Amino acid sequence: MLSNSQAHDRGVSIGAGLLFGAGATALGVLAPTRPLGGTALYTVAALVAGALSSRASTAIRSPSASTANTTLTLIGVAAAVVFPALVAASGLGYFEWTPLSAGLGLAVGGLFVVYGVVGLADSIRGQAV
Amino acid sequence: MTELFSGATSARRTFAGLVAISGVGLAVFTTLERPFVGVGIYAVALVGAISVQWVTEMPVFDERDEAIAGDAARWTLTVLGWTSAGVFPALTVAWGLGAFEWRPWSAAIAVFVASLYAVYGLFVIALQRRR
Image (cartoon, rainbow over all chains, first blue to last red; front, top):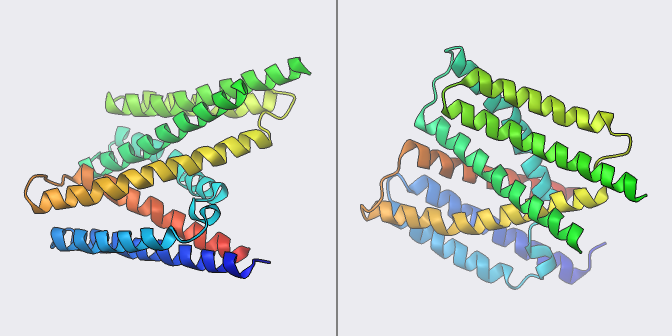
């Protein structure tokens, strides 16, 4: 069972997360037509969310390891199936790489390069100690 | 005991190396327009990585590896999140001022980052509910 202050902290950090998400969505939706207005909305939402979450305890503020791991596992498994299939399809002439799909591939690749490097650094540090 | 541990360690290294080769091989040979070579390397390296776990007598990964993977995932999302929170609004401002032009590939990266954190947010909500 959570204590009252923990429940309050959790509510505050969820509220801050949702506010930040709303700001980021506004940025994405408004960017094509009103880039400066979208960025202004985003900045206000991000600042308020940051101020809110700094009032919650640090234990709840940082992303939890298991949630982060679940997210990366889901995206990793999806990418491990989709991208080889796209490469094979392009070889057979059923698919053409566009800048958009290549950009997506680049983003996924970069994400797992970062993950791999961080994991490697972590395990080397663990063995040294 | 030390012999067992070094066995699991080398198995882990082989596994990690093969997974890295599969991804890099797929990316490199796709860029070089040799799709079947890329997919071939990818498939062989992944099958090799999986069979490392089969042929090794002892468990290859333990709780400590799980902890490291979780820690690495947390750091990855934190660092990428802070970077994106600064870079993408700055690019949008630069675009509004005419100093930057969105290309399909840069827009695709932005869309991917947004989807990544949408997935993460959904997992946060789902996992908090379960507790």
